[in-house]
Image 1 (cartoon, one colour):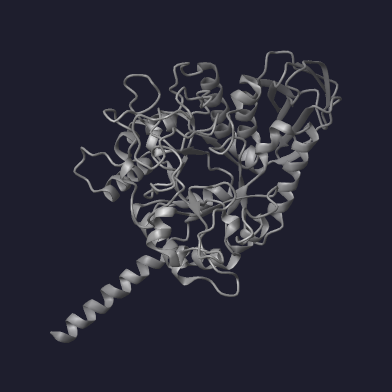
Image 2 (cartoon, one colour):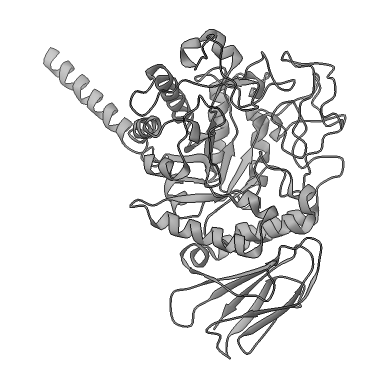
Length: 514
């Protein structure tokens, strides 16, 4: 009997260990991302489905802020947009001391293993973690994957509680990285010797998000930790789930750390360390010439081919760190971004409210608050950016209302991408020459005889219309058919040439087939 019991226990333990080491059933995010088929949207649960009943764009004490339970109401809307992956901004508890904003920055982490109580439905019988798990489960029911954000620095509250996790100066004071005054710099160690206390805290975070059912992690400012730190953490995670995806917030345009005390690991070394992808510097489009855009596309295509293992990136035209495109260059710029997202062979990424044309201008911004949960009595806000510091309204829900034109355009663009996903992700990218330095043009074509092709051209001049744009089209057959997907009808193709007119910031898309 004892022998039988011992045998059964041994078998059960072996089975449990085997299950831990295998990929979690159903997670396919890493494969999806590496094939450039993850359509990602970043959301802040705290305002994702906030109930602003009096319309003052702040969630007052007697109103319901966004939480894991009411967030479920918006998931069908997200799926209808063509989004298949949510990047959930940090869900961990936030610091309340030396804070920014009346709720505290989402990125001022106060606990690696807990759930932010601000994101919890107080009327639910479920525990905070079960509420978070229910939200993720509901995402999975709709075939929506979930990436959870891992903050890069700790709150002042966490520093007071666990000073051993942080770098200190000669006077044993904590280090403020750059102008991030509400957070302190972790002491991760270096490639020769890592700080095991910090590493173990991050491993506990991994354990929690895997327990919740998440499919991946987005590492905030991944560049300020040494490469060996990520090697160990990613290996630890992949032993639990081989399909777990790691996205590094890092860019090829980042050149130095935010503090002299911080480590700096550039984007290419992060990819070598095990990250599946990083941020292309597409947020610089607002300042680029046409050739700058084309060269950056080519640069990333060549970069990703240089690794022995598959790698990819996100099209970071608009994130919670970027000013709303509406404020920068108007509606046409937002439309252009949607179609670039739809037609380029990388992973499209947008932020909650972008599809609806939100300008993220809040009437109460940077004024004194009537109520605060932190030691900051000011509604601290980054102008024109998604609010991550206060209990603010639902994105896209300002008094100006939803921009239906932009919303329909976003849906059309993402549906076009889904309908042509094989051509866009596996086709050959070719630059097309134009007669204007502000007008870009490119072609995505099948790698076969009589290929289907997608033609994209756009005007990066946001002040002047282009009346006579000419583009040479290689390998055009006289029997080829042209379908205008996006444009006003001015686009004409004749004798291997394309001619068109482009208003300020306008983009046109056509499909050619035999």
